Length: 289
Image (cartoon, rainbow, N blue to C red; front, side, top):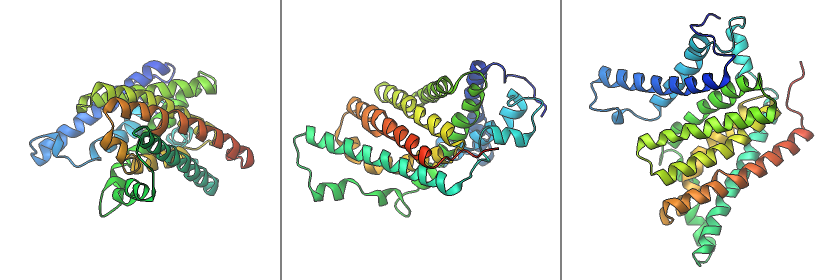
């Protein structure tokens, strides 16, 4: 593949320009959409089309043909393979691992809600549980969260696909996973542009970095993006329904703390990594050449 630049030998610069490219693509797509449809502002564009289209443009055009990854001597097919986008076998094992890891995440989130309820000195009974965990609220026809959560699939292609693959060329697996997780966490500082409070953004950066360690770990252990995609998609889809009670009753700093510990942070990450190690020992998922 021919590219304008050759940045595959400089992973840190590549990662910075990769993030910048996504932001630039988002701005360009928003401007084009507003001008074409004569909208008053970008806020009128339905979600999640701008970030999804920005990821598609960045991943499949900018990265290989502008930023120069995976390199001039590689074909486009090799690029898709290196970012693990075409690696979906054994399909059943990958799906099962992803679903069971998400179950761990969901139970950790529910546990956080129960702990918060207890700190209020309030009882936990059947009525509270039935009213607090209504997953149907995030499914059609009540919600279009199933569509909005699609962005998480493209985030995995970006951070556990492109960025992690590039760092693995220069560092051992633990460092590559850590560095890609740090980039994933820092990317969430962009939520400040949406008017998010600093306390919430800080918590989001921390828990995204922690959870990014799991996403990188499961990707390396399975050789596929599929488990991380499943966990990330389902996590984004049902997080509002599971954590509705905390979001309604807790202050933003408290929500951030629970996010770091229970919702998307330390507890689910440690448990999912442990389960991934156990699962892949029992059922090796990396295909042998």
